[in-house]
Structures are given as C-alpha cells and as structure tokens.
Length: 306
Image (cartoon, rainbow, N blue to C red; front, side, top):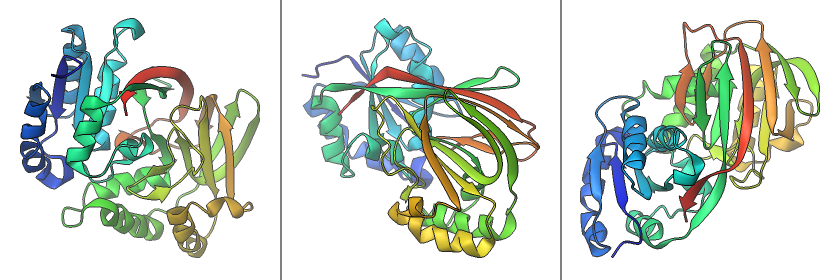
C-alpha cells in the first residue's frame, strides 16, 4: 500500500504528446503500490490549480508527471499552501528536458523513477521566488534565466520536429544568429552591486537546463544558495566557442567573458524590456515590458520524494 494519499497530475502533451502513452504504461506500477488518483491538465497553469486543490483536499504526495514545465506549475500550486500543510512533491520525468528530476537524482528509467517516488523518503529543497515591477510573483525550482537562454526557450517552443536536447540545441544556434542583443543591467545582491552589459544571466537552483546545458556545475537544490552565471557582451563567434563549454560545464574558466557567483537575494534593473524564462516557462516574452525584478531564495521550502 502507498505510504501517502497520492494525486498524480499528468500533462498528456509533454514531450510532444508522448507523455500520455508513457504514463499509461506505468499504471500497473501505480496499482502495485496501492493506486493513486489521476488528473490530467488541459490548459496552461491547470497543473497549478490542480496541485493547490489536491493539497487543500488533504493529499500528502503530489506527483508531477510531465516535463519541467509541469513540475514548475505544480510547485507554484504547492507554494500557495502553508508550509505545515504543504504536500511532498514527486517529479516523474515525462518531458523533453527533465532538468529538475535530474537535479534531485530521479532515474531516467520511468518505472524506476516511479518506484523511487512511491517508496522514497522526503528531502527538503530550496525554492526561488521572483517579483516584477508590477507585483507579479512566481516560484521556480530549477533555473531562472534572462536574455539569451529565455529567447532559446521561446524559439524551442516553435520547433515541432526535434525533441529533447536537440530541440534546445537547435534553438541555441538560431538565437546566436538572430538575437545577439546585450542588455545593460544594474544588479544588487545582499553582498555586492554592479552594472554591466550581458547577453545572458541565469540564476540556478540546479546545475543544468535545456536538457543538458550545465550552467552552474556546483548548484544543488538543497544548499541554501543560488548560483548565477552571466555571459558578458561577446561576439557571435565567442558564443559558438562557449557552446561546448556549457555542454561540459567548463565555461567558468573563461573569466573575461563570464561572471559566476552565488547569492540569496537580488534586485535587477535593465535599460530595455527583459526576456525571461522560469524553469523553461516564459515569464516575459516578446512584446512584454518587464524592466525591474527582485528575487529571493526560500530555504527548505518544499519536500521532494527521492
């Protein structure tokens, strides 16, 4: 029998629609552990609503079955619940990138991953929260990116043929050629302040994004800090030079081109609208006018099953 009253929230459209079939193949494992209640998402942010509702109904474990976007939405639902009543999170990797499940040590083999979640122990992780100059707040569990990688995310959503890491890699190549646009940013943390032109600034609670780009090799979801990586205004040829370094996580040695560090709080102001993704979901896209942000890390904010 399951240890927890469990709700599984499935995004059937994850991984270009393959998630529905993959999840159906796992039903026998769910039944093996006493079953759970299933719910499917049908529109953007639906997983947020379903997760909050399930928590209010007394479910103790909420499994996000999908990609990083599904996990992101479920996390945002759970963070609406008071800490003492907040259910644990399970992340079943049915998406294209699955960077969060990788960060917390969930197997890429789906039957093994589901057994990990259903038989595992809860572990507390940190959660980040950002707020723009209009008071809009959103939580993130893995990465929060400004500039280049946000444009990559936007472009990846328009690539229906390729999947997984190749989808993001193709979008990276497009973005280098078509969106080489540095942003002048004023940044202040709890310990420092500076201003500079950047092509990209990423805050990392986990080490990677885009299914395999290792942005912050030392980042861990439970270490009480956010790691950041910023790419200065470099040439297109240098961006191509840095690309394999990001795939290996060795870009930190390019100190003239890249700034890296740690923080727990940050405020940011830009000279033009910011393109922003949060866990691979678009927070501020083309046509938006977000120019100011503040960010904070919430230590030990959520339990995950590992």
